[in-house]
Length: 450
Image (tube, rainbow, N blue to C red; front, side):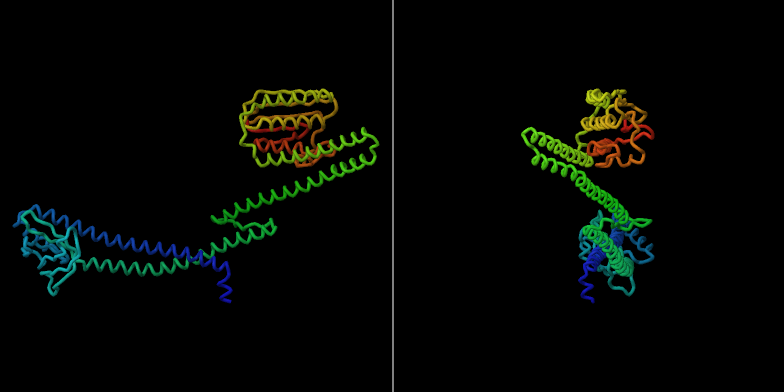
């Protein structure tokens, strides 16, 4: 059982995560303890050296006789007997003070730790002190120092305190590291398990977030949003595939039957030519469906935003009207355009005129014969509105959420492939416009930032 547990990838991950976190915390604790000890030790040394420098400066300004008197007074005021002061001649002979001999190590530059022989500490023949020597103006040498017994005791107390505090700290760091490692491994394992189930085809799986999410749970929430988007795209792709198969099956079946009948029944070149022409018309319709689908897909990917430039909507609206005016005249429809000047917008001119053209074409197709179609361009307070109206009943309220879906055709729509308003909706979304249907009547509007 133990061998199985050791070989479990989750267990190994737990130990790796826990070991890494614990090692980091242990190193941090040791470094902090060492830094504290160095600061404590260095603080004592710096204080001692400042005192040594002050002794050298103050005694160097005095005459030899006054210097000896001042030295004795300084020793008399040292009630704790932890200071060492002595004057030595150039040959090393003691002149005055509480140190019997000048230690050889004390002749080095700066302060040093050396063993001395005190003269005024009964029962003590040697002691360890931090010392410094400095030359006096008359050629003598001043030895100044401080007993390290108290300092060493304080440092030992600090060392013991650090040791007593460090040991439970290290144990706590190891325990916390293992717990944190186990938690991190569990979280990572949850994401890994989720990805395995999604790869297996279960797109409904989501990560738990909770009511008060931490950083990892917030990441889980973002992953869930990403999965929602992926699932929506997969459903769209599946739906498009089903729609394509459904929409192309009937035209292809009709095309095959037409060709088969033409080959079987055509008695002369003219009849065969007519059959071929009809087949070409069917093929052109199929190619139009495929081209429209590819165009909608391109727009939904927002691949054309990089080509946006300032666009004059008023001029585009006039061009759209001029483009459809001959067709309107042929159908006996009055096409009017009421266009106000508006501020330029960032967009793709060819796509925007295509959206207007689709709306005008739908209005002429589904409006009453010999009716009136109008295109209006208005600048409102914070928006620009493009509206196309006809004299028909408009899109029924129940069908409005459906008419922008691919291949949807209303009850009275027997022409086209049902992609016109899907394309208009894609162009509107690309430009930040909203496709809006009037509550009553047949007005359809594109409302965008202006």
